Image (cartoon, rainbow, N blue to C red):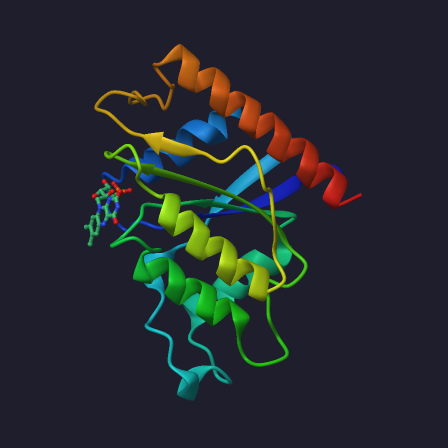
Amino acid sequence: MSTYKIAVFVGSLRAASINLRLARALEKLMPADFKLEYASLGDLPLYNQDNENNPPPPVVKLKQLIADAQGILFVSPEHNRSLPAALKNAIDWGTRPWGQNSWAGKAAGILGASPSAAGTAMMQQHLRNILAAEGVSVLSTPEVFIQFGEGLVDDQYNITNEGTRKFLQGWVDRYVAWIRKFND
Ligand SMILES: Cc1cc2nc3c(=O)[nH]c(=O)nc-3n(C[C@H](O)[C@H](O)[C@H](O)COP(=O)(O)O)c2cc1C
């Protein structure tokens, strides 16, 4: 395969999101043949089954993004010990209508950043449960729970802490190898 399309789902809508910043930093650690495209979760209406057979354009775009991807990358905050509503909303749209689940058979990786040390562990577990039910294979280890302090990722999206950079490069290398193998 000449290029691998990776659909990125950042679970925060915030312009200054630390998870968006982390995703941008991960992008810099990826090889040149991995092309990342970000899902626009903020453009999606709230899921409504009345509209799933005539989906609004942002939903059509979302489902196409997933369908075209060789890999999925979730980088998300934890909201009240679970995944943010915006991310769950996107997952729900992607599963419908019945029989047209865009997620089935995809491979994914999950990471999360929080200002708190234990942050995103519960979110990641909940997300793994949901994805298992939708037929997504998720890279199991290493798990990545980033405690995100001020300046961890600079304005050029470089990771300023050497230990964290090495750890994340190791994760990216593993994710990349797995996505290549998965799509063989
Ligand atoms: C509604 C809400 C709920 C939150 N719940 C949690 C939580 O359960 N665990 C956690 O570690 N941080 C929690 N936080 C703090 C977030 O980790 C923090 O706001 C973080 O910056 C969000 O990521 P973002 O910058 O990518 O938006 C919560 C924040 C909000 C706004």
